[in-house]
Length: 321
Image (tube, rainbow, N blue to C red; front, side, top):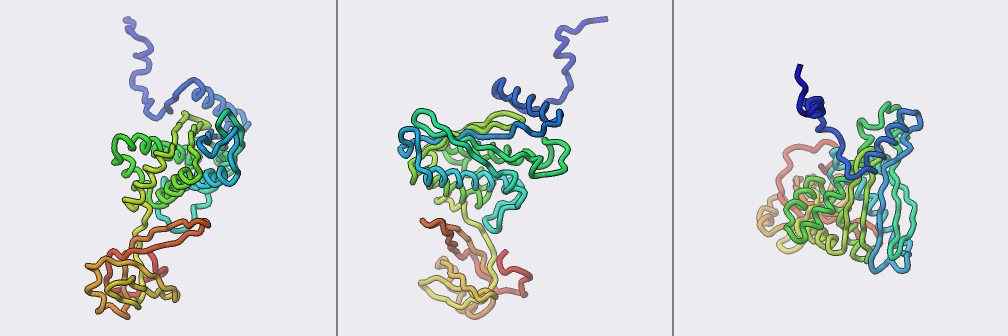
């Protein structure tokens, strides 16, 4: 009988650990152990995922920040986390409401405290057992959706911070993959960071798993804003069905929907030539739809025609697809 040179290596040979979570320090491993124990001991998910959001910058004075400034940024940050979660679940477009279960699973509550020169908000995620009654294990199905969303959001923030110096290809690819709704919320968050003169340091602690962290400085926010605007990542491509009621060589074209609403849109010069033959006929216009948020928080939609074709048959259901 022979004894292996390395008994532990021989024992673990062939064991698949590819799905095991990675830990950045002992605290991560301790948190997972305590949470798993609490759940199986019948105490429920006593340790929830949580984030530490440190606000600092010109608007933070003597360990305080104006309520309107802080709540504006936290509200947009909440929307961004929910938008990323919806995208991960397949809902990438700007239209429609967030799926209710996604909204509930990503809803955060907060408690503020201060350190010299900063205000820190502790954001706490919902207990998946409360949102998804009947689950028998906290680690399956959508229980970790908020963690996946926060991780993707912070990966995007870190890629953007690095992209300021090293190029924007990875950031652009990530934004396009997440879709226009996420891009629009990232654009709003970037604008708020710039306008309110507040920068963010975020640390996300999973209830079961590692810690993720990232920063959004003014420079990062400016880079994200410019990248999204220049590449129109926040725009949806949709099909509009209706009757073309205005054609012109210089001004916008108008499309009357069956609801009676009129949609006005810009159009490229090379698409204007065949318009006369389509006047007063039903057409399908493939358009780029962009949602703008104005100062009061109200949203305004603008459209740019990409193609116009005669409608061959009556559309079924909604006139927008």
